[in-house]
Amino acid sequence: MNNIYLIGFMGAGKTAVSKALKKKIGWKLEDTDDMIVKRVGMSIPEIFEQKGEDYFRKVEREVVASLTKEKNVIVSCGGGVATFEANREEIKKGGTVIFLSATAKTILSRVKRNNRRPLLEGKKTEKDIQNFLDERMPSYEKARDYTIAVDGKTLDEIAEEILCHIDL
Ligand code: S3P
Image 1 (tube, rainbow, N blue to C red):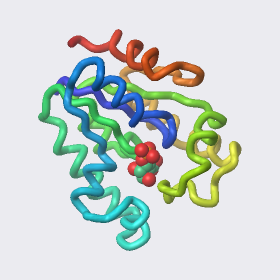
Image 2 (cartoon, helix red, strand yellow):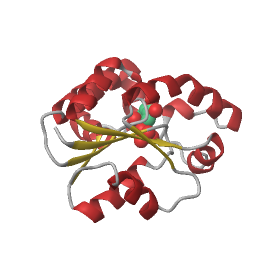
Image 3 (cartoon, rainbow, N blue to C red):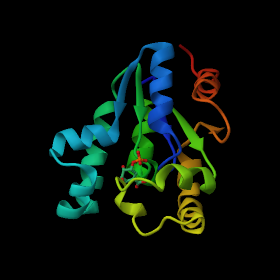
Image 4 (cartoon, rainbow, N blue to C red):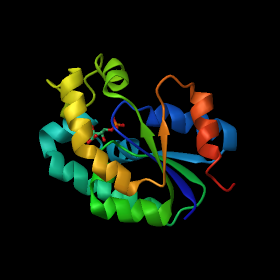
């Protein structure tokens, strides 16, 4: 209802920012990826590999919808959440949607050292990330109420900027 949804590309800092927000306002924190992992009982790479992306997206849709009627929850959304119309409708109903926008360069620096993101395996150049980002940008823009550019800012600064848009 009055939740705060953080959306944006993988590596934009949604998880870290959601924790910084929680410290400031004490709301409950949910992470759609964590909820999926818990429900399915497998890691994200295992779900993609053994069950496929469509299955992942189905569970993702269920967990997103399960949060809509909740109150005072900070929701860190997986990078693909806002790319689906059904999810966009749910998060818009559920509260304020904040798009954390980062450059491909910043994203690459954050995602290059881990292999927890199946969609980025073999695609870790700045150009690959830029193309993927360009593809998703219209969805993020459709979903968001506010955009916060995160490059070069501290978590505290980003959290404060978000809170300027939230009626507590
Ligand atoms: C995805 C982003 C990931 C995770 C999955 C798919 C995406 O979450 O949900 O690997 O489609 O962008 P993060 O944005 O938290 O990395």
